[in-house]
Length: 300
Image (cartoon, rainbow, N blue to C red; front, side, top):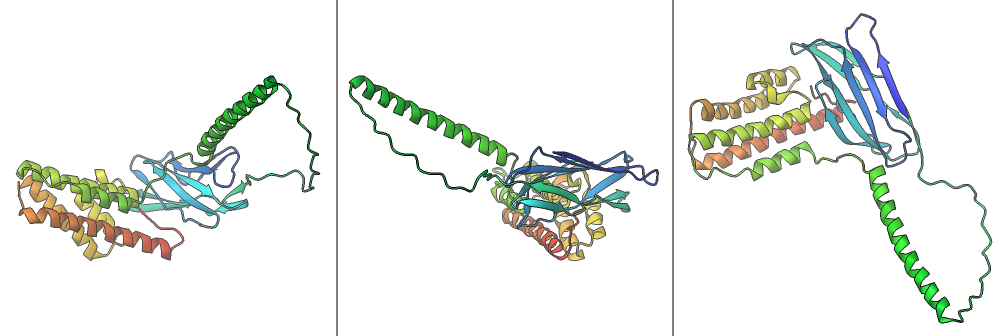
């Protein structure tokens, strides 16, 4: 099955919304890629995608891949029959302002069961046959056949296991962005020799981990934006001022280490790691609460 949905705006808007569902036959437990892309947009127009809300009884989102113009959701289905994926909205931004809001049509998929049966009738048990082993040759032949059967069964079992893994577990499964980022911060070692150069590298690494977290959770180019641009973006999407100020505070520490060659006390290195963990945890809580209160969680 390969379904493609296109929405054209007939000159009203210069961009097209394309939905591509990639799969042959969908079974319970198999992965299906749903790709949403915005085409023919101008250079200064940026698509903003939404998190796809899971329905735990019908499907879960196993993974997602984001590009500048598209997002791919990898869904794993758990229910047989017709499954309807709700409309997926997309915002078009220009100069940090939403200029248009578009959405896909509902996507209907037919999920098949892995169990098939052609008859419900009970078959009669075949009568046992008497096996007479007279010569050693027949005994040896039987033993050889038994060993060959065991080896063949083992080979078939391994082949079936590999095929099952390939069929139902295709794709990558990531731990949450919060857990991954917290672990990277906790594992970041203190500089062996504390000087202006090692201090700068230490705080730039903390900032990099935090920006990658924002990129994964909020679907923005955080690694390419300045600290001020990120702060303005957070204000635009309704992040509380206190949390935005916390982001500005950690950015000032990085700027002091980078541009002023500031070296804080040794205890401050560990305290700043804790502040970064608190910061991304607070942002993640806001994202989670937003997803629980709305049909879709917006991660600009």
